[in-house]
Image (cartoon, rainbow, N blue to C red; front, side, top):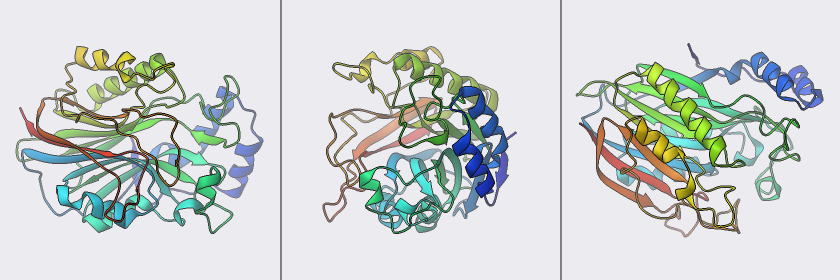
Length: 333
């Protein structure tokens, strides 16, 4: 059972020191994860504007790359009239985003409820382009994670951890970024939302970038099993950055991922995803080395009637993220 909190308990200075001094092993990482309450809970807040969603639902999934500009990011998708927004890479108490709770700010701007979960507890300020946005030399909380925004209050929610070995922490294998150690790992949030046609399950997820197709296959398989246990026989929409094609040289072809057929074998469909590359240069990632298709919708028991790739470049020519958003409208079958 996932504990739902009004406020995530901060990491104490003593625990910060313990994390920094811990051996870089998977066993140490798992022990630390168990000692940090925010790694097993979800934070909820905001206020919905509806009692139940209609049977036709407008959904946005967007990796907002830390969410440097929460209000502008919310305004950018407002014309789509989203009832559900699935976010990844949102900050909470990070110097690079002004110590703000970016999920809460977006939810307030859109008039929605939110559920936020911690993917990583960041121990440092970030890379050079991120540090350019820092006015402080510390992170208030250091939370970085995923979120679900909704026009209705969820009936129940679940945090789903997709790994616990410390892919960005442990030296049992080569750490993903040895200069920026962090506690945590990839995860998903699942929420059961009421609709006029019955409950549905919405899932926001983010798979590993610094890994191969087999690693992401295992993460997605773990996710599908968890959804089956949490929302059996319920219509489901999974949305997010699946990092498809990452670390698959030489061509980084997303079609080489095996998770697509895995999902189909479990009764899921990928047709809600719009065509097109979903990455672009941004303020934090100004010179990407390749164009990639990373962001997807995967559905079961729903039918997509519309979809669209939504540029992250705002009306002033400023990229709000290194990912474009994906949008779809789904109806229950």
